[in-house]
Amino acid sequence: MHKGQYLDLKEITLPVADELLQFETAFQNALKSDVPLAQEVIYYILSRKGKRLRPLLVFLTAKLHGGLTEKTRSSSIIVEMLHTATLVHDDVVDASSLRRGSPTVNLVWNNKTSVLVGDFLFSKTLTSMLDLGDLKALAILAQTAKDLTEGEILQIATSNPEDMNESVYFELVQKKTASLISASCELGALSVSCSEEELTRMRAFGINLGIAFQIKDDILDYRGDVKNLGKPTGNDIRENKITLPLLLALSRSKESRRITELLQDEELGEPELEEILEFVNTNNGVEQSSEIAGKYAQHASFILESYPDSTSKTSLINLVNFVVNREK
Image 1 (cartoon, rainbow, N blue to C red):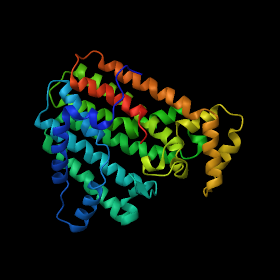
Image 2: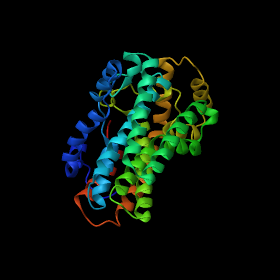
Image 3: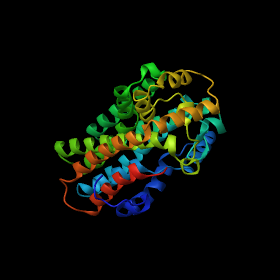
């Protein structure tokens, strides 16, 4: 890992703390609806906010390239809208009951309401993209939306262990997670009129950071703390998601046939779930995944080396370290 110090997220956000505070008000205003039910659901979503990683990246990468503009602020809202819309839809597809420690929208209301609110968020994203008035930004966001959707379909198509391998896993991660993180970095730079070379650099930084972020997420599903995660460990297995720790353990163990058979059981019990978790931990699936996440994090940090020292550069380096060391 890079020599940058590991800090908590609050310290990392300090260079753009005022912008993030203003973002919350602007984001809330941007999501307003005249339909009472839609507004009720939106309020519920807003009251259970996440890390705001994507807006943070927009702000920090913009500052890294010179400063923040009105386009920077608009871009931060758009990426978080798109992210929120995908989460609402993902919870329906995965039949999830918890998100950030609280009941999901589909559990509190129903699938129909969740899908329609997700559609509402996507429509808000589209109108905001048009208001941005930047064809290059529009192209980045359109490609990202395509990647996100294809990633979700690919995940459904590879729920069977026989259809999943490391190559497919990394394609899935790049589409479902890294694409939007990469777009956030690219849009931040674009908002201050950067060169094509700088945009390419930010795209690569975001892809590497996004892959490291998702691998760490997958690791936490095997070794995370339930209170920190806001969801039970082993949740990916319950939702038929075959992630890197499991793939690596399966490829390195002679007992993989037994585990593969368990994974094909549509009604997996808690004893079987515990057996799979134990199998992954025993066969070093977590440790090897951590090493791979660390390599992607190193690649991300290396890309920042060409920039002069600044508070935004320091925060981005620390953010890379945070991503692979976090516990939730």
